Image (cartoon, rainbow, N blue to C red):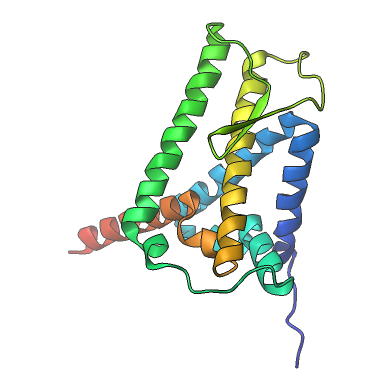
Length: 198
């Protein structure tokens, strides 16, 4: 059997792994995660559709590697509710609400009405104290955003790993907020094109 040719973007899972590791040792690396938010949206808005999800998403690749190649997935069918529009759009709204709350907490620290909380919050509930390094040399709001954003990225990774183990390797992809958002952008753009052509 002929071996499938690998391209540079087939190794994006390495960057996702490095990001998670670096964030543990220096929380400021969490800011790099903004690329995972901005690039898919920019690509979708500029006509790239869901190319990022299908080709460049390091998390999707990592889940596929762990689930399929290393056989950590039960490889069971994805439940219908996970694939339902109401669930994916509902999860997107919930995810955006948590993201806005994170931004609001960052704003409070920026204003000086709240103090910096050096903790990573997993699954929006469990606070893990962070004692890996010194962040006193930067503005507290910069560190607060990093803690909040890393919490979001770690939580979504954990959810991805849980659904990977329980169902198909890339089960996360069917309800990923970024995937839902880029899908929504594609639908709006296609509707606009269709409207203009009528």
